[in-house]
Image (cartoon, rainbow, N blue to C red; front, side, top):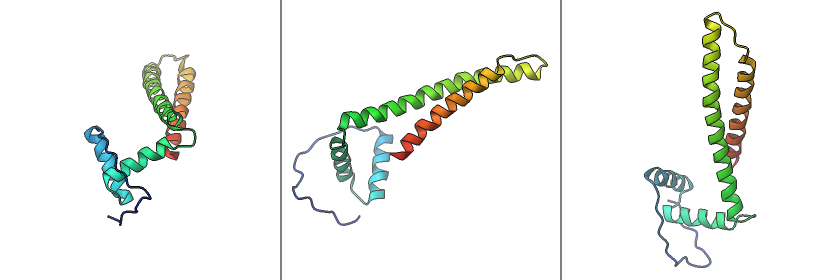
Length: 124
């Protein structure tokens, strides 16, 4: 642990939070990486979000929007993947797949959406 940087004003208000086991593991890993204790890390993170330039609502909604976009893109890729399996089955059995180009275009659009959302998350 690195020496604790003293705040100009001592934090004397206590709040309790609930985390899942996975969330706690993530927070502990991040705190350790930063050389901080979990409580200090959580406090600093909460204050940073609360003081974000456009306010916490904007930041949290941006995060939620990106995650929802990833979920929609992932679901769309699963549906399109099913279409591509049908295309492959038809072509492998000597049949015709007139909708193949449409299915491939949908895959490319969905993949681009997922990639864009993942890139956005990685930037944060």
